[in-house]
Amino acid sequence: MVKKNGVRRILLMGVFWRILFIEAALLVFSLFYKWATEDVGPMDLFWYGVRIIIMVGIIIAFMTITLKKFLNHQIITPLEKIATANKSIQQDITQADQIEFSDDAPDEIKTIVTSRKKMLETILSVSDERLRLVNFIRETFGRYLSNKVVDKILESPKGRQIGGTRKTITVLMADLRGFTSLSETKDPEEMVQLLNRFLEKMSVIIHKYDGIIDEIIGDSILAIFGAPESHDNDPERAVACALEMQNSLIPLNNEIIAEGYPSLEMGIGINTGTVIVGNIGSELRMKYGIVGAAVNTAARIESNSIGGQVLVGESTYDHVKEYVKADPAQTAMMKGMKKPLVFYSVFAIDSRYIVMLQSPVGGKIVLPIKLPFQCWKITDKKIELIPLTGETIRMDDHKIDAYIPSGLEVFTDIRLRFDFCLDAHCFEDIYAKSIPIEKAGENSFNRLQITSMDPKDREIVKKWMIQGLY
View 1 (cartoon, one colour):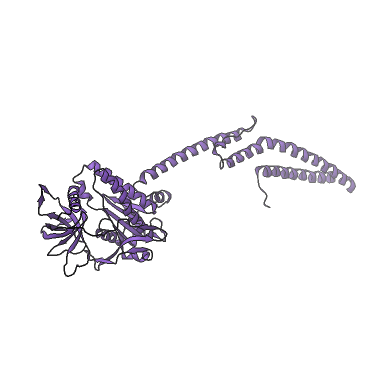
View 2 (view 1 turned 60 degrees about the vertical axis):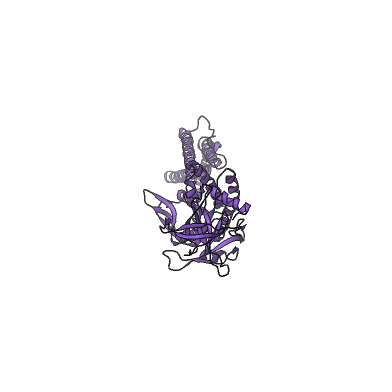
């Protein structure tokens, strides 16, 4: 058993052994002096030594008893009270300054207690202030960055250093269809409020699946799964998150349609790959972000999606193919790429997460109608000057089957304008994307997924569908 070296034991034993040493030295000196100066026999010297030892014992006992009581009262007990009070801080900080001493306690010990109290008050004040500051930083910057990223920056000594690490993550890109053109015809404050409602709902879902929103660019969201902390199911969580994001638009659209807004549509692209994750920028301005080809690929995959669709790249699909249901692979040759981009349209996942797309892309077009139109290709957000001509075959308020003599490549974005007006009403420009469709016999046509359409024009098409006009 290890003996505790408390102040009581150290002080009392130190005093005892020192007194004992002094008395032993006096005993030896007295015996030697007696023998050297007087003619005494051995027995006389022996009994003289016994008398000295008895006297020394009485002195030691007296000193031990009286000195122990004195030291206990004046020094040991006050110091033990301070030590006990220090231990009590761990359980109850309010008990830290409750130490009582006698009036005759040494001034130095009283000074220790007074200084200790002031020191504790200062520490607590600084700790509370620091805690409030840290909480403020977390709450404030947590809205601009993920809480996990803020924690990493605050807790790590290298959190603010520029640089990054190579990690394999899954990138999710989500973008509203037609929101830019819609905002041009609506009050800016209303559109910001609508956009904020959309972003709030999407943010909750992304956080639910432990994703991090790296950037919000207008009506687009860049989220990452696997940074700053990696998990073994990052692609799985990203796909489940994307499906739930699409499903969440259904109740949101029900709300905003009742308020007079058009419904929102969102396309999502997902890709998995290696990127550099960390602080990017300079000492004057930096951000926590990601850099790498995987991000660009995710953006390209998303650009091929249509409203209500979740497209996943080949690398992501390889990780989740055992759990998802998806359409056959699609390919698109993108600018600057040496080989075709391969992706899959996913509509369900069944793993530790079970999510099914409630509004799958597809469905029959119900209104046969022939309407002449002109359309312009959109490449890298630039509208080509030379129009193409065409004629609708069938349409509803979301899709158009059309015959375009010169043809359109799959996933081409276009601006479409009808060549007629109805009862003094002229259709506004329609934005759409060419999507894959099988040939109907020998006839070949393009299917166009509408990404943006004026609400008044959409209502006219719905009325035609109800009345069966064509």
